[in-house]
Amino acid sequence: MSYHNRTPFQSFGEFIQHNRKKLRLSQTALALMLEIDRAHLSRIECGIKQLNAEKLEPLSRIFKLKLAEVQREFYSDLIVSEILRNNCPESVLETARAKVKYLKAIHK
Image (cartoon, rainbow, N blue to C red; front, side, top):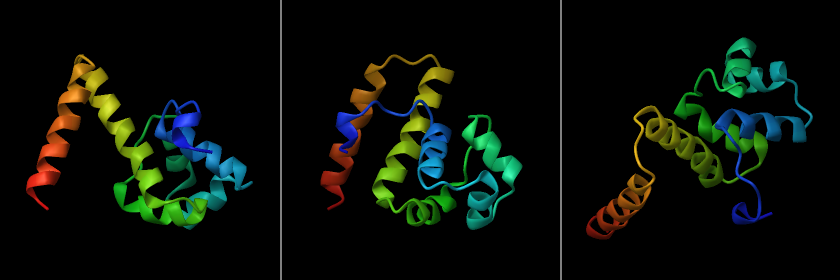
Protein backbone atom coordinates (compact mmCIF):
# COMPACT_ATOMS: atom_id res chain seq x y z
CA MET A 1 0.00 0.00 0.00
CA SER A 2 1.32 3.42 -0.92
CA TYR A 3 2.13 5.83 1.90
CA HIS A 4 -0.23 8.41 0.42
CA ASN A 5 -3.13 5.93 0.34
CA ARG A 6 -3.22 5.28 4.06
CA THR A 7 -3.70 7.18 7.27
CA PRO A 8 -0.32 8.27 8.64
CA PHE A 9 0.80 6.82 11.93
CA GLN A 10 0.27 9.11 14.89
CA SER A 11 3.83 8.53 16.08
CA PHE A 12 6.97 6.63 15.21
CA GLY A 13 6.23 4.40 18.19
CA GLU A 14 2.87 3.48 16.65
CA PHE A 15 4.68 2.70 13.38
CA ILE A 16 7.06 0.36 15.22
CA GLN A 17 4.26 -1.32 17.15
CA HIS A 18 2.15 -1.82 14.00
CA ASN A 19 5.01 -3.43 12.08
CA ARG A 20 6.15 -5.49 15.07
CA LYS A 21 2.66 -6.93 15.52
CA LYS A 22 2.30 -7.50 11.78
CA LEU A 23 5.35 -9.77 12.02
CA ARG A 24 3.99 -11.30 15.24
CA LEU A 25 7.08 -10.28 17.18
CA SER A 26 6.97 -9.70 20.90
CA GLN A 27 8.53 -6.57 22.35
CA THR A 28 11.18 -8.79 23.89
CA ALA A 29 12.05 -10.38 20.53
CA LEU A 30 12.26 -7.05 18.69
CA ALA A 31 14.25 -5.46 21.52
CA LEU A 32 16.77 -8.33 21.34
CA MET A 33 17.08 -7.92 17.57
CA LEU A 34 17.70 -4.17 18.00
CA GLU A 35 19.99 -4.75 21.00
CA ILE A 36 17.96 -2.48 23.26
CA ASP A 37 16.12 -3.06 26.52
CA ARG A 38 12.51 -4.28 26.24
CA ALA A 39 11.36 -1.54 28.64
CA HIS A 40 13.01 1.06 26.42
CA LEU A 41 11.18 -0.35 23.37
CA SER A 42 7.93 -0.16 25.32
CA ARG A 43 8.57 3.52 26.09
CA ILE A 44 9.37 4.16 22.41
CA GLU A 45 6.12 2.52 21.32
CA CYS A 46 4.23 4.64 23.86
CA GLY A 47 5.87 7.83 22.57
CA ILE A 48 7.75 8.52 25.81
CA LYS A 49 11.24 7.88 24.43
CA GLN A 50 12.86 8.19 20.99
CA LEU A 51 14.68 5.42 19.16
CA ASN A 52 18.35 6.14 18.41
CA ALA A 53 18.69 6.97 14.70
CA GLU A 54 21.46 4.36 14.44
CA LYS A 55 18.77 1.69 14.82
CA LEU A 56 16.83 2.76 11.71
CA GLU A 57 18.76 0.55 9.30
CA PRO A 58 18.45 -2.60 11.46
CA LEU A 59 14.76 -1.80 11.97
CA SER A 60 14.20 -1.53 8.22
CA ARG A 61 15.85 -4.92 7.70
CA ILE A 62 13.79 -6.55 10.47
CA PHE A 63 10.54 -5.11 9.12
CA LYS A 64 11.59 -5.79 5.50
CA LEU A 65 10.89 -2.16 4.60
CA LYS A 66 12.89 0.32 2.59
CA LEU A 67 15.16 2.41 4.79
CA ALA A 68 13.60 5.54 3.24
CA GLU A 69 10.17 4.55 4.59
CA VAL A 70 11.50 4.04 8.12
CA GLN A 71 13.44 7.31 7.90
CA ARG A 72 10.31 9.14 6.68
CA GLU A 73 8.34 7.97 9.69
CA PHE A 74 11.18 8.65 12.15
CA TYR A 75 12.19 12.11 10.96
CA SER A 76 8.65 13.32 10.30
CA ASP A 77 7.89 12.44 13.92
CA LEU A 78 10.88 14.51 15.09
CA ILE A 79 9.85 17.46 12.92
CA VAL A 80 6.25 17.36 14.12
CA SER A 81 7.42 17.19 17.73
CA GLU A 82 9.59 20.28 17.28
CA ILE A 83 6.81 22.20 15.51
CA LEU A 84 4.33 21.40 18.27
CA ARG A 85 6.79 21.96 21.12
CA ASN A 86 7.67 25.40 19.76
CA ASN A 87 4.11 26.29 18.72
CA CYS A 88 5.24 26.96 15.13
CA PRO A 89 2.82 27.58 12.27
CA GLU A 90 2.39 24.78 9.74
CA SER A 91 3.87 27.08 7.10
CA VAL A 92 7.25 26.15 8.57
CA LEU A 93 6.91 22.85 6.67
CA GLU A 94 6.54 24.62 3.31
CA THR A 95 9.57 26.80 4.06
CA ALA A 96 11.60 23.74 5.08
CA ARG A 97 10.58 21.90 1.89
CA ALA A 98 11.74 24.85 -0.23
CA LYS A 99 15.05 24.99 1.64
CA VAL A 100 15.67 21.26 1.16
CA LYS A 101 14.92 21.56 -2.56
CA TYR A 102 17.30 24.53 -2.87
CA LEU A 103 20.11 22.90 -0.87
CA LYS A 104 19.85 19.65 -2.83
CA ALA A 105 20.05 21.60 -6.09
CA ILE A 106 23.21 23.46 -5.15
CA HIS A 107 24.95 20.38 -3.71
CA LYS A 108 24.51 18.12 -6.75
